[in-house]
Image (cartoon, rainbow, N blue to C red):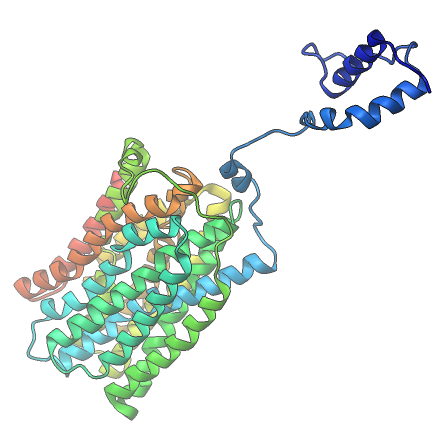
Length: 453
Protein backbone atom coordinates (compact mmCIF):
# COMPACT_ATOMS: atom_id res chain seq x y z
CA UNK A 1 0.00 0.00 0.00
CA UNK A 2 1.39 3.38 -1.04
CA UNK A 3 1.58 5.91 1.76
CA UNK A 4 1.06 9.54 0.68
CA UNK A 5 2.75 12.45 2.28
CA UNK A 6 0.73 15.43 3.40
CA UNK A 7 2.13 17.48 0.53
CA UNK A 8 1.05 14.86 -2.03
CA UNK A 9 -2.43 14.62 -0.59
CA UNK A 10 -2.87 18.40 -0.71
CA UNK A 11 -1.65 18.40 -4.30
CA UNK A 12 -4.29 15.86 -5.31
CA UNK A 13 -7.06 17.92 -3.69
CA UNK A 14 -5.89 21.01 -5.55
CA UNK A 15 -5.89 19.13 -8.88
CA UNK A 16 -9.46 17.96 -8.24
CA UNK A 17 -10.67 21.46 -7.67
CA UNK A 18 -8.88 22.72 -10.75
CA UNK A 19 -10.54 20.06 -12.91
CA UNK A 20 -14.03 20.91 -11.63
CA UNK A 21 -13.71 24.72 -11.66
CA UNK A 22 -11.81 26.36 -14.55
CA UNK A 23 -9.91 29.50 -13.65
CA UNK A 24 -11.50 32.89 -14.07
CA UNK A 25 -9.18 33.54 -17.03
CA UNK A 26 -10.71 30.65 -18.94
CA UNK A 27 -7.48 28.55 -19.00
CA UNK A 28 -7.58 24.81 -19.30
CA UNK A 29 -7.11 22.61 -16.18
CA UNK A 30 -3.48 21.92 -15.31
CA UNK A 31 -2.07 18.53 -16.29
CA UNK A 32 -1.56 15.89 -13.63
CA UNK A 33 1.59 16.14 -11.57
CA UNK A 34 4.15 13.49 -12.29
CA UNK A 35 4.43 12.98 -8.54
CA UNK A 36 0.94 11.55 -8.40
CA UNK A 37 0.84 7.76 -8.72
CA UNK A 38 -1.98 5.55 -9.95
CA UNK A 39 -2.66 4.51 -6.41
CA UNK A 40 -2.89 8.12 -5.37
CA UNK A 41 -5.57 8.73 -8.01
CA UNK A 42 -7.51 5.69 -6.85
CA UNK A 43 -7.28 6.87 -3.26
CA UNK A 44 -8.61 10.28 -4.22
CA UNK A 45 -11.48 8.93 -6.32
CA UNK A 46 -12.69 6.77 -3.45
CA UNK A 47 -12.30 9.34 -0.72
CA UNK A 48 -12.97 12.73 -2.26
CA UNK A 49 -15.45 12.19 -5.11
CA UNK A 50 -18.35 13.32 -2.94
CA UNK A 51 -16.64 16.66 -2.34
CA UNK A 52 -16.14 17.21 -6.06
CA UNK A 53 -19.74 16.29 -6.89
CA UNK A 54 -21.07 19.09 -4.73
CA UNK A 55 -19.72 21.60 -7.22
CA UNK A 56 -22.17 22.49 -10.04
CA UNK A 57 -21.20 21.50 -13.61
CA UNK A 58 -19.94 24.48 -15.53
CA UNK A 59 -22.61 24.25 -18.29
CA UNK A 60 -25.65 24.52 -15.99
CA UNK A 61 -27.20 27.96 -15.54
CA UNK A 62 -29.67 28.40 -12.69
CA UNK A 63 -32.73 30.35 -13.77
CA UNK A 64 -36.00 31.24 -12.06
CA UNK A 65 -38.84 28.77 -12.67
CA UNK A 66 -40.77 31.28 -14.75
CA UNK A 67 -37.92 31.62 -17.25
CA UNK A 68 -37.64 27.86 -17.58
CA UNK A 69 -41.34 27.61 -18.36
CA UNK A 70 -41.41 30.54 -20.76
CA UNK A 71 -38.69 29.05 -22.90
CA UNK A 72 -40.30 25.63 -23.20
CA UNK A 73 -43.65 26.12 -24.96
CA UNK A 74 -44.75 23.04 -26.97
CA UNK A 75 -46.22 25.17 -29.80
CA UNK A 76 -47.76 22.03 -31.26
CA UNK A 77 -48.07 18.30 -30.74
CA UNK A 78 -51.11 16.14 -30.01
CA UNK A 79 -51.70 17.41 -26.49
CA UNK A 80 -51.38 21.07 -27.44
CA UNK A 81 -53.83 20.73 -30.34
CA UNK A 82 -56.28 18.90 -28.09
CA UNK A 83 -56.13 21.97 -25.87
CA UNK A 84 -57.13 24.04 -28.91
CA UNK A 85 -60.06 21.68 -29.59
CA UNK A 86 -61.20 22.00 -25.97
CA UNK A 87 -60.87 25.78 -26.17
CA UNK A 88 -62.92 25.79 -29.39
CA UNK A 89 -65.68 24.00 -27.48
CA UNK A 90 -65.43 26.72 -24.84
CA UNK A 91 -65.85 29.57 -27.32
CA UNK A 92 -68.70 27.69 -29.04
CA UNK A 93 -70.54 27.64 -25.71
CA UNK A 94 -69.69 31.20 -24.66
CA UNK A 95 -69.19 33.66 -27.51
CA UNK A 96 -71.07 31.45 -29.97
CA UNK A 97 -74.05 31.35 -27.62
CA UNK A 98 -73.87 35.02 -26.60
CA UNK A 99 -73.34 36.22 -30.18
CA UNK A 100 -76.64 34.53 -31.05
CA UNK A 101 -78.45 37.12 -28.95
CA UNK A 102 -79.63 38.93 -32.08
CA UNK A 103 -82.17 36.19 -32.82
CA UNK A 104 -83.59 36.50 -29.30
CA UNK A 105 -83.75 40.30 -29.52
CA UNK A 106 -85.93 40.07 -32.61
CA UNK A 107 -88.02 37.15 -31.33
CA UNK A 108 -88.72 38.77 -27.96
CA UNK A 109 -89.68 42.09 -29.59
CA UNK A 110 -92.17 40.31 -31.85
CA UNK A 111 -93.63 37.71 -29.45
CA UNK A 112 -92.77 37.08 -25.80
CA UNK A 113 -91.92 40.66 -24.77
CA UNK A 114 -93.72 42.67 -27.43
CA UNK A 115 -94.92 45.25 -24.89
CA UNK A 116 -91.38 45.91 -23.62
CA UNK A 117 -89.33 48.73 -25.23
CA UNK A 118 -86.49 47.46 -27.47
CA UNK A 119 -83.88 49.30 -25.40
CA UNK A 120 -85.05 47.43 -22.28
CA UNK A 121 -84.87 44.10 -24.07
CA UNK A 122 -81.37 45.03 -25.24
CA UNK A 123 -80.27 45.17 -21.61
CA UNK A 124 -80.59 41.38 -21.45
CA UNK A 125 -78.08 40.97 -24.26
CA UNK A 126 -75.77 43.74 -23.06
CA UNK A 127 -75.58 42.26 -19.55
CA UNK A 128 -74.77 38.94 -21.19
CA UNK A 129 -72.00 40.51 -23.27
CA UNK A 130 -70.49 42.43 -20.37
CA UNK A 131 -70.51 39.51 -17.94
CA UNK A 132 -68.46 37.45 -20.38
CA UNK A 133 -65.64 39.88 -19.55
CA UNK A 134 -66.45 41.48 -16.19
CA UNK A 135 -65.72 38.46 -13.92
CA UNK A 136 -62.29 38.12 -15.54
CA UNK A 137 -60.75 40.23 -12.77
CA UNK A 138 -61.66 37.64 -10.13
CA UNK A 139 -61.53 34.57 -12.35
CA UNK A 140 -58.10 35.51 -13.72
CA UNK A 141 -56.66 35.89 -10.23
CA UNK A 142 -58.00 32.51 -9.12
CA UNK A 143 -56.56 30.96 -12.28
CA UNK A 144 -53.12 32.32 -11.37
CA UNK A 145 -53.51 30.71 -7.94
CA UNK A 146 -54.26 27.29 -9.45
CA UNK A 147 -58.05 26.95 -9.20
CA UNK A 148 -58.70 26.30 -12.87
CA UNK A 149 -60.67 23.03 -12.60
CA UNK A 150 -63.11 24.21 -9.94
CA UNK A 151 -63.78 27.50 -11.74
CA UNK A 152 -64.26 25.93 -15.14
CA UNK A 153 -66.55 23.12 -13.98
CA UNK A 154 -68.66 25.50 -11.89
CA UNK A 155 -69.03 27.97 -14.75
CA UNK A 156 -69.97 25.16 -17.15
CA UNK A 157 -72.70 23.97 -14.79
CA UNK A 158 -73.99 27.54 -14.39
CA UNK A 159 -74.42 28.20 -18.10
CA UNK A 160 -76.15 24.84 -18.71
CA UNK A 161 -78.55 25.23 -15.77
CA UNK A 162 -79.33 28.81 -16.77
CA UNK A 163 -80.21 27.70 -20.29
CA UNK A 164 -82.73 25.16 -19.04
CA UNK A 165 -84.22 27.83 -16.76
CA UNK A 166 -84.70 30.21 -19.71
CA UNK A 167 -87.20 27.73 -21.12
CA UNK A 168 -89.42 28.42 -18.10
CA UNK A 169 -89.21 32.22 -18.29
CA UNK A 170 -92.35 34.24 -19.01
CA UNK A 171 -91.64 37.77 -17.72
CA UNK A 172 -88.99 40.35 -18.50
CA UNK A 173 -87.20 40.05 -15.16
CA UNK A 174 -87.07 36.25 -15.58
CA UNK A 175 -85.13 36.64 -18.82
CA UNK A 176 -82.93 39.36 -17.33
CA UNK A 177 -81.95 37.10 -14.44
CA UNK A 178 -81.52 33.79 -16.28
CA UNK A 179 -80.39 34.78 -19.76
CA UNK A 180 -78.69 38.04 -18.90
CA UNK A 181 -77.00 37.46 -15.55
CA UNK A 182 -76.66 33.68 -15.17
CA UNK A 183 -75.63 32.90 -18.75
CA UNK A 184 -73.28 35.89 -18.71
CA UNK A 185 -71.60 34.82 -15.46
CA UNK A 186 -71.23 31.25 -16.70
CA UNK A 187 -69.68 32.42 -19.95
CA UNK A 188 -67.36 34.75 -18.04
CA UNK A 189 -66.15 31.94 -15.81
CA UNK A 190 -65.25 29.93 -18.91
CA UNK A 191 -63.76 32.56 -21.23
CA UNK A 192 -60.87 33.99 -19.18
CA UNK A 193 -59.40 30.64 -17.99
CA UNK A 194 -59.66 29.28 -21.54
CA UNK A 195 -57.56 32.14 -22.92
CA UNK A 196 -54.97 31.71 -20.17
CA UNK A 197 -54.69 27.95 -20.70
CA UNK A 198 -53.97 28.38 -24.41
CA UNK A 199 -51.06 30.71 -23.58
CA UNK A 200 -49.50 27.92 -21.53
CA UNK A 201 -49.13 25.78 -24.65
CA UNK A 202 -48.32 28.23 -27.44
CA UNK A 203 -45.94 31.14 -27.92
CA UNK A 204 -44.48 31.31 -31.44
CA UNK A 205 -47.77 30.04 -32.90
CA UNK A 206 -50.00 31.75 -30.35
CA UNK A 207 -51.78 33.92 -32.91
CA UNK A 208 -52.69 30.91 -35.04
CA UNK A 209 -53.85 29.01 -31.95
CA UNK A 210 -56.08 31.89 -30.83
CA UNK A 211 -57.46 32.17 -34.34
CA UNK A 212 -58.42 28.50 -34.29
CA UNK A 213 -59.95 28.86 -30.82
CA UNK A 214 -62.06 31.78 -32.03
CA UNK A 215 -63.38 29.64 -34.88
CA UNK A 216 -65.43 27.81 -32.24
CA UNK A 217 -67.24 31.05 -31.53
CA UNK A 218 -68.11 31.47 -35.21
CA UNK A 219 -69.36 27.90 -35.45
CA UNK A 220 -71.57 28.36 -32.39
CA UNK A 221 -72.82 31.73 -33.59
CA UNK A 222 -73.73 30.16 -36.93
CA UNK A 223 -75.19 26.84 -35.82
CA UNK A 224 -77.30 28.03 -32.88
CA UNK A 225 -79.32 30.68 -34.79
CA UNK A 226 -80.02 28.16 -37.57
CA UNK A 227 -81.12 25.59 -34.98
CA UNK A 228 -83.40 28.19 -33.39
CA UNK A 229 -84.84 29.28 -36.73
CA UNK A 230 -85.80 25.72 -37.65
CA UNK A 231 -86.98 24.54 -34.24
CA UNK A 232 -89.05 27.51 -33.02
CA UNK A 233 -91.97 26.98 -35.45
CA UNK A 234 -91.86 23.19 -34.98
CA UNK A 235 -91.38 22.55 -31.27
CA UNK A 236 -91.90 26.00 -29.74
CA UNK A 237 -89.72 28.25 -27.60
CA UNK A 238 -89.40 26.01 -24.54
CA UNK A 239 -88.12 22.92 -26.32
CA UNK A 240 -85.88 24.96 -28.59
CA UNK A 241 -84.11 26.35 -25.52
CA UNK A 242 -83.94 22.91 -23.89
CA UNK A 243 -82.25 21.54 -27.01
CA UNK A 244 -79.78 24.42 -26.70
CA UNK A 245 -79.14 23.23 -23.15
CA UNK A 246 -78.42 19.66 -24.25
CA UNK A 247 -76.05 20.90 -26.97
CA UNK A 248 -74.14 23.00 -24.44
CA UNK A 249 -74.03 20.09 -21.99
CA UNK A 250 -72.31 17.87 -24.57
CA UNK A 251 -69.91 20.51 -25.89
CA UNK A 252 -68.84 21.73 -22.45
CA UNK A 253 -68.42 18.13 -21.32
CA UNK A 254 -65.79 17.69 -24.04
CA UNK A 255 -63.99 20.90 -23.09
CA UNK A 256 -63.89 19.92 -19.40
CA UNK A 257 -62.18 16.68 -20.38
CA UNK A 258 -59.62 18.18 -22.77
CA UNK A 259 -58.55 21.43 -21.12
CA UNK A 260 -55.79 21.53 -18.52
CA UNK A 261 -53.09 23.96 -17.56
CA UNK A 262 -49.45 23.11 -18.30
CA UNK A 263 -47.57 25.44 -15.96
CA UNK A 264 -47.85 25.17 -12.18
CA UNK A 265 -49.48 28.05 -10.32
CA UNK A 266 -47.10 30.78 -9.23
CA UNK A 267 -47.63 32.78 -6.06
CA UNK A 268 -47.66 36.34 -7.32
CA UNK A 269 -47.65 39.07 -4.68
CA UNK A 270 -50.70 41.28 -4.45
CA UNK A 271 -54.46 40.88 -4.58
CA UNK A 272 -56.95 41.10 -7.42
CA UNK A 273 -55.38 44.20 -8.93
CA UNK A 274 -51.92 44.78 -10.30
CA UNK A 275 -52.04 48.55 -10.65
CA UNK A 276 -48.36 48.58 -11.57
CA UNK A 277 -49.38 47.19 -14.97
CA UNK A 278 -50.93 50.57 -15.80
CA UNK A 279 -47.49 52.16 -15.61
CA UNK A 280 -46.97 50.52 -18.99
CA UNK A 281 -48.42 53.07 -21.41
CA UNK A 282 -49.07 50.42 -24.07
CA UNK A 283 -51.22 48.37 -21.68
CA UNK A 284 -53.17 51.42 -20.48
CA UNK A 285 -53.92 52.64 -24.00
CA UNK A 286 -54.91 49.12 -25.06
CA UNK A 287 -57.44 48.85 -22.22
CA UNK A 288 -58.99 52.24 -23.01
CA UNK A 289 -59.25 51.51 -26.73
CA UNK A 290 -60.87 48.14 -26.03
CA UNK A 291 -63.48 49.86 -23.83
CA UNK A 292 -64.26 52.34 -26.61
CA UNK A 293 -64.51 49.69 -29.32
CA UNK A 294 -66.84 47.54 -27.23
CA UNK A 295 -69.28 50.42 -26.95
CA UNK A 296 -70.09 49.78 -30.61
CA UNK A 297 -68.88 46.30 -31.52
CA UNK A 298 -72.11 44.37 -30.82
CA UNK A 299 -74.56 46.98 -32.12
CA UNK A 300 -74.84 45.74 -35.70
CA UNK A 301 -75.23 42.05 -34.85
CA UNK A 302 -77.77 42.92 -32.14
CA UNK A 303 -80.07 44.87 -34.46
CA UNK A 304 -79.36 43.51 -37.94
CA UNK A 305 -82.37 41.16 -37.85
CA UNK A 306 -84.61 44.04 -36.78
CA UNK A 307 -83.37 46.28 -39.59
CA UNK A 308 -83.89 43.41 -42.05
CA UNK A 309 -87.60 43.17 -41.26
CA UNK A 310 -87.96 46.98 -41.41
CA UNK A 311 -86.72 47.12 -45.01
CA UNK A 312 -89.17 44.41 -46.06
CA UNK A 313 -87.13 41.22 -45.79
CA UNK A 314 -89.38 38.33 -44.66
CA UNK A 315 -88.92 37.40 -40.98
CA UNK A 316 -88.13 33.81 -41.97
CA UNK A 317 -84.98 35.01 -43.73
CA UNK A 318 -84.21 37.91 -41.37
CA UNK A 319 -83.39 35.32 -38.70
CA UNK A 320 -80.41 34.18 -40.77
CA UNK A 321 -78.56 37.51 -40.71
CA UNK A 322 -77.05 36.79 -37.30
CA UNK A 323 -75.86 33.41 -38.59
CA UNK A 324 -74.46 35.06 -41.74
CA UNK A 325 -72.48 37.56 -39.67
CA UNK A 326 -71.09 34.89 -37.36
CA UNK A 327 -70.25 32.56 -40.24
CA UNK A 328 -68.30 35.36 -41.92
CA UNK A 329 -66.40 36.01 -38.71
CA UNK A 330 -65.06 32.44 -38.91
CA UNK A 331 -62.90 33.35 -41.89
CA UNK A 332 -61.86 36.64 -40.32
CA UNK A 333 -60.79 34.95 -37.11
CA UNK A 334 -58.78 32.29 -38.92
CA UNK A 335 -57.09 34.80 -41.23
CA UNK A 336 -56.28 37.12 -38.35
CA UNK A 337 -54.72 34.32 -36.32
CA UNK A 338 -52.47 33.25 -39.19
CA UNK A 339 -51.41 36.80 -40.06
CA UNK A 340 -50.67 37.82 -36.48
CA UNK A 341 -47.85 35.28 -36.18
CA UNK A 342 -46.19 36.87 -39.22
CA UNK A 343 -46.72 40.60 -38.66
CA UNK A 344 -47.90 40.88 -35.06
CA UNK A 345 -51.42 41.01 -33.58
CA UNK A 346 -51.69 44.80 -33.39
CA UNK A 347 -50.74 45.17 -37.04
CA UNK A 348 -53.68 42.90 -37.87
CA UNK A 349 -56.23 44.32 -35.44
CA UNK A 350 -55.87 47.97 -36.48
CA UNK A 351 -56.80 47.65 -40.20
CA UNK A 352 -59.54 45.10 -39.51
CA UNK A 353 -61.05 47.41 -36.89
CA UNK A 354 -60.97 50.32 -39.33
CA UNK A 355 -62.82 48.36 -42.02
CA UNK A 356 -65.45 47.26 -39.48
CA UNK A 357 -66.03 50.90 -38.49
CA UNK A 358 -66.51 51.94 -42.12
CA UNK A 359 -69.02 49.14 -42.67
CA UNK A 360 -70.94 50.15 -39.53
CA UNK A 361 -71.32 53.64 -41.03
CA UNK A 362 -72.73 52.06 -44.21
CA UNK A 363 -75.10 49.65 -42.46
CA UNK A 364 -78.18 51.96 -42.16
CA UNK A 365 -77.98 52.76 -45.88
CA UNK A 366 -78.27 49.09 -46.92
CA UNK A 367 -81.92 49.06 -48.01
CA UNK A 368 -82.02 45.89 -50.11
CA UNK A 369 -81.57 42.26 -49.22
CA UNK A 370 -78.35 41.95 -51.22
CA UNK A 371 -76.85 45.13 -49.78
CA UNK A 372 -77.60 44.09 -46.20
CA UNK A 373 -76.08 40.64 -46.79
CA UNK A 374 -72.89 42.24 -48.14
CA UNK A 375 -72.68 44.61 -45.16
CA UNK A 376 -73.24 41.75 -42.70
CA UNK A 377 -70.60 39.54 -44.33
CA UNK A 378 -67.93 42.25 -44.41
CA UNK A 379 -68.68 43.39 -40.87
CA UNK A 380 -68.65 39.83 -39.54
CA UNK A 381 -65.30 39.11 -41.21
CA UNK A 382 -63.59 42.20 -39.80
CA UNK A 383 -65.10 42.21 -36.32
CA UNK A 384 -64.25 38.52 -35.95
CA UNK A 385 -60.58 39.30 -36.46
CA UNK A 386 -60.55 41.82 -33.62
CA UNK A 387 -62.26 39.53 -31.12
CA UNK A 388 -60.04 36.59 -32.09
CA UNK A 389 -56.87 38.47 -31.16
CA UNK A 390 -58.30 40.45 -28.25
CA UNK A 391 -56.24 38.67 -25.56
CA UNK A 392 -53.11 38.16 -27.62
CA UNK A 393 -51.41 41.55 -27.17
CA UNK A 394 -52.03 41.42 -23.41
CA UNK A 395 -49.97 38.25 -23.18
CA UNK A 396 -46.92 40.10 -24.47
CA UNK A 397 -47.26 43.00 -22.00
CA UNK A 398 -45.93 41.28 -18.89
CA UNK A 399 -44.97 38.08 -17.13
CA UNK A 400 -46.51 34.68 -17.88
CA UNK A 401 -47.12 34.14 -14.16
CA UNK A 402 -49.42 37.19 -14.05
CA UNK A 403 -51.42 36.51 -17.22
CA UNK A 404 -54.72 35.89 -15.46
CA UNK A 405 -54.69 39.09 -13.40
CA UNK A 406 -53.47 41.30 -16.25
CA UNK A 407 -56.06 39.89 -18.65
CA UNK A 408 -58.76 40.16 -16.02
CA UNK A 409 -58.21 43.88 -15.47
CA UNK A 410 -58.43 44.62 -19.19
CA UNK A 411 -61.53 42.47 -19.65
CA UNK A 412 -63.27 44.12 -16.71
CA UNK A 413 -62.66 47.55 -18.24
CA UNK A 414 -63.96 46.65 -21.70
CA UNK A 415 -66.96 44.89 -20.10
CA UNK A 416 -68.33 48.29 -19.16
CA UNK A 417 -68.36 49.20 -22.84
CA UNK A 418 -70.09 45.94 -23.75
CA UNK A 419 -72.69 46.60 -21.03
CA UNK A 420 -73.56 50.12 -22.13
CA UNK A 421 -73.29 49.73 -25.91
CA UNK A 422 -76.51 47.95 -27.04
CA UNK A 423 -78.88 49.86 -24.69
CA UNK A 424 -77.39 53.17 -25.85
CA UNK A 425 -77.97 52.07 -29.44
CA UNK A 426 -81.54 51.06 -28.57
CA UNK A 427 -82.20 54.41 -26.92
CA UNK A 428 -80.84 56.24 -29.98
CA UNK A 429 -83.12 54.17 -32.20
CA UNK A 430 -86.16 54.96 -30.04
CA UNK A 431 -85.35 58.67 -29.97
CA UNK A 432 -84.70 59.02 -33.71
CA UNK A 433 -87.06 56.37 -35.08
CA UNK A 434 -84.40 54.90 -37.36
CA UNK A 435 -80.97 53.32 -37.50
CA UNK A 436 -78.87 55.98 -39.25
CA UNK A 437 -77.80 57.59 -36.00
CA UNK A 438 -77.27 54.11 -34.53
CA UNK A 439 -74.87 53.29 -37.38
CA UNK A 440 -72.97 56.53 -36.80
CA UNK A 441 -72.73 55.67 -33.12
CA UNK A 442 -71.44 52.13 -33.73
CA UNK A 443 -68.95 53.14 -36.41
CA UNK A 444 -67.82 56.23 -34.52
CA UNK A 445 -66.85 54.38 -31.37
CA UNK A 446 -65.09 51.62 -33.27
CA UNK A 447 -63.14 54.21 -35.23
CA UNK A 448 -62.36 56.21 -32.07
CA UNK A 449 -60.97 53.08 -30.44
CA UNK A 450 -58.70 52.61 -33.45
CA UNK A 451 -57.46 56.21 -33.26
CA UNK A 452 -56.54 55.78 -29.59
CA UNK A 453 -54.09 53.09 -30.60
